[in-house]
Every structure is written in structure tokens, then in C-alpha cells.
Length: 324
Image (cartoon, rainbow, N blue to C red; front, side, top):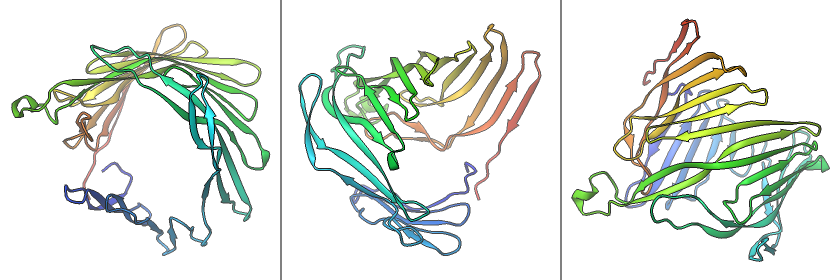
């Protein structure tokens, strides 16, 4: 129904064996079957295109091994706070290009400390750990290296990426949305004797992104505001132009819901409104989230997109969906 032309067939989990077994048929006739996930898994998928050529998870249609992943022997890393983490010295991905030559990417690691300082409502527990994160990614044939920097003794966010060309992309962060996760399975937990209390989850969101091309820097900012049924993000580009994105809850139940972009307003650097775009959606029922996560709307799709100019002129695109 989303227009992709993908057909999904199969069976879904039950309480006895907890597995997913399904097959995919793509728009061009390519078949991917079977795919098995879960306790009954272990079987790898195969691909067959509309010409009958087959590919497995271990070889492509020319019977070549498409990708190999090798971890170097484990070593001990020390975080900036002196904690020890054990992991592979590096990981290498190798494949053969169209000329039959082997190409390899090598990822090296570093250890950081995670110690969150997120604001929270009521009683909460901050997260603390040590973990491995990427340090450098070496491209094939010594064609360059990416470098990665991370927050330490904080939320462990990515702070910058050094590019092979000599430039960089850096980030700063702000407090992100708060998720209210009900411990009970549904909104009737008080009637069934379940625990109706909530867990409050927070995460950070990007506040700014700065791109350095080796000579000059250009900065984008993202000012976010979060509400119970809608949130907005104001994006300001290096020239001062702005976009205001509004995300609204689609058919929110009492707890949880699904948030989608419903409006974007575009302003020039002088603050004049250039155009407004609104979107409407359809969906097929509410589906229980995994574990204790909120319910979500299923198969959400855009049904109309309306562009409105300051002089009142409008253009609307409507999309209808059929089950075939």
C-alpha cells in the first residue's frame, strides 16, 4: 500500500516458538526467501531475480564471496577515566570490486566512559558504563581516513568526524524528548492488577552542526521544543534562513503514539514567510510496541501534501492507496 510494490508473505511469532518466517517479492520480480528470525532461526535468506539468477548470503550471483568481516585478536583498552575495556584491536571488511581486486576497510577502536547527566522527572537512575567506539576508519588503498571524537564522562555522543579531505563535521547537543513508558501492558492495567507506574526515558538531540571545508566553517542550528502531542524544531542555516518543522502525534491513545512531520514553514533571513507545507496521514490501526514501549500507528502513509504561499495560493497533491 505504500507504493513500493513489495509483497510480504509468511507467518509471524506465536508464544510457542517465537519466530518470524517470511518471504519478499520485490516490484521487479526479485524473490528473497526465506527469512527466519528468532528462536527457530538459523536459515539464511537467498535472492532470485526475475531472470532466475540466484544469490545467497555467502555468495553473489557470480558465485563470489560478497563480503568478509574479520576481527583482530582482542586487546585491552583504557578509558580516559582509567577503566578497562576488552575488544578487538580492529575490524576489517573486505570485498572484491568489479575488476576482481580485493578492497578493504579497517576500523580501529577507542574506549570511552559513559556517565549520563540527563534531567529527569521524579526518581531516576543515570546510566554509567565503559564502551568501545570507532576511532578511525581507513579507506581502501590508503585513499584516506575518517577520524571520530566522542563525549567522555557524559552521554557518549559523537562530537566530530574528521574527513579524508581534511575537513570536518562537528556537533553540539541539547536535551531531547522525554518518553513516558508504562510498565503495565495496556491502559487497563489498573483494572487487571498490573503495575501502572511509568519509566521516564530521555535522550539528547543535536543542537548545532558545523561543517568545516578546510578553509571556512558553516553552522546549522536546531532549536527544539517538545510537547505532549506535538513538537517543533527550528533549523537555521549559515545564511540565516529558517525552517520550522512541526511533528504531531498521529491518533495518540491515552499513552504513547506515533509522531510524524505535519507542517514545515520556510522563512528567509529577514524573517518573511516564503511558504508552508502541510501533510495529512492515514494509518491501519494501532499496534502494541515491543516490551513496554508505547503503541504505534501501523502502516502510516501520506494522503495529502499542501503547499500554501503567503498570497493564499495553494497546491495540493493527494495520494490514494489500494490493496491489490
